[in-house]
Amino acid sequence: MLNYIDQASKQGGCGPLLEHSGPSASPLPLRQQIFQHVRSNGRAARADITRALHISAGSATTLSAELIASGILREVSEPVRDAGRGRPPVALEVVPEAAYVIGIKLSFKRHSAVLCDFAGNIITTASVPASDKRRSTSELLDEITGLVSRVCEKSGAPDRRINAIGIGLPGIVDKDSGLIRWSSLLHDPNVDLKTAFGARLDMPLFIDNDTNMLTLAELWFGVGRQKADFAVVTIENGVGMGLVVNNMLYRGTHGMGLELGHTKVQLDGALCRCGQRGCLEAYLGDYALTREAATALDRDDADLKDKDVLLELLFEKAKAGHAAAETIFRRAGRYLSIGLSNVVQLFDPPLIILSGKRTRYDYLYADEVLAEMQKLTLTQGRQPCQVEVHFWDDLDWARGATVPALSALTDTMVGGLEVQNL
Image (tube, rainbow, N blue to C red; front, side, top):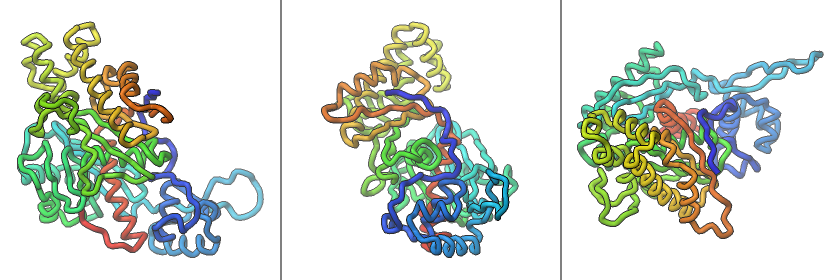
C-alpha cells in the first residue's frame, strides 16, 4: 500500500506520543516523564498527567511545581467550554525561551539550518549555497560557523543564547567517539569535527548521519510520533536508511549501521563513490543516474554541468517516452525493490517511509516496483509492509538535527543529568 504525505503531523507538541503503563515502565525520572508528556502533547492539565502516567495527584502537583519553579514549565489558561462558575481550567506547557538549539543539514550545493526553542517551535531558518566538491575540515567549519551566524542574525539572537547544535551530514559517524569515519563532503576519513568545532564555538555539538536526523524528524514532528516501529529510506545523492524500534532510533552497536546504500546488490558491479563495487546507491544515487544519462541523452544534453538540471531533463524525457531515459529509471526502480525487500526481510517494519529529493521520480515507487518488493520478500504469515512517500525539504532534515540537542538539554535541565558533548 502506497500513501503520499507532504507535511508533518498537525497535532500540537513534539516528540513521540507514547502509551504509558505506569511510572515503572520508563527508566526516566518521573519529573522528566511529566515534562515529556507536556511537551509531546503541547499542553496538558495535571489531571491528564495523573491519568496518563498512572501516578498520584500529589506527585503530579509536587513535581510540576518544581518544573514551574525551575522556569521549564508554566501554567496557562485553557479555553472555557461551558459558561458557569468556578475557576478557569489551567494547563501546563513548556516555557519556549528556556533554551534554544540549532539544527543543521549539510549537503552538496546547499546547507540549511533551523533555530528552535525548547518546545520544538521553529524560530527562524537559513540556507546558504555550498560547494559540491569535497573539502577540508577547516573549510567545512567555516561553512558551519557562517551558517550559525546567519541564522542567529536573522533571529536577532546572539550566538551565546544557543544552548546546543545538532548537525546531520551524509556519511558514517561513530556515535561513541563523534568521529566522522567517512563522508562524501570531506577529503579525509576519521575527522574529529567535534573538537575542531569546540575550538570555535563553546557549546555542545551532536553529529549524526543525515538520514538518522531525518528519521528523528519523523519520530518527533511527523507521522512517526504515533508509530513504535518504522523505517526511513532516502534517495538523494546517495541512499540512506534510518530505523526506529520501540520509539527509539536504532544505530547499531557503534552507531554506524543501517548503511543501506552500501549494501551489495551486484558482485563486481558499478563503482560506488565509497570505492567499492556493486553498492545499492551506485544504481540509485544522483551520480549513478547522471552517469547513465551521459550515455542515454544527446551529447549537448549530457554535457550539462549542473547535475540537478541534467536529472530533471532526464526525467522529462522519460515522461515524454524517451526509451533510453525511461529504461534508466525503471532499472533504478528494480534495484530499489531489492533494497526495500531486504529492509522488510531483515527488520519487518510495518511502515517504510521513502523520502529525499529523488522521490519526485515516480518511477522509483511505481506499482511494479512495490509489487517486485513484495515478490522478493517471504510473505507467508507476514502483514504487508506499508510504503509512504513523504516530501520533506532540507529544512525538515535540519529540524530533525535539533532532536539530539533537545533531548540532551532535557536530560540535563529536567532530569538532572550532565549533557555530553557528542
